[in-house]
Image (spheres, rainbow, N blue to C red):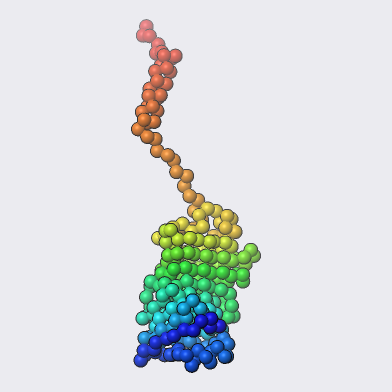
Length: 260
């Protein structure tokens, strides 16, 4: 569904040019049918505060995306892709062959007949949300790095935990939550994920998050250390004095035997 008019500027190498005629046809026909939507190099798709309903189409982005796309299956970014103030709701694979730094909110949902999906390449995103009630598995690239700057939300349901895994089997995959970012973790089954380059994820016991740890993880489910306050200079001096007085008192009550 197109909620607000949008415009696009198409370069010579653009694969698809969005313009008012296509917009009118889309409004008349409803959601786009499954297939592949291309935002070619040199082109720009801007929807303002609205969003484009894709109806489980795949999306290849080599140009600019400004605004939201919803109902995508697989999303692929090519070199030259530029996501600014964007949001992408998908069900299948996220593959980034373009720039790592992206101003985008990724919203993973069940749907489009997809069970398992992967986050491939390296992406630094504003927010990452993965919600599932089907017990699906999301795999993170063991050879890349996924970094979340603003907020991370990972949620399954009781009896159908969201499974978080690495594409490398038992090789850990980096998933980093920047310091200062927010997090919401509930009902996940996590293994072979390395988050040691950022803040702790789900600090505490797995049961605190209705979750389980079934394999090696770094920086997950860690019980925070209880800080031990250091003694100040005055307190240290008093402690030493008390020890000396205790020693003198003990020596007075138990004097050494006099030599015969």
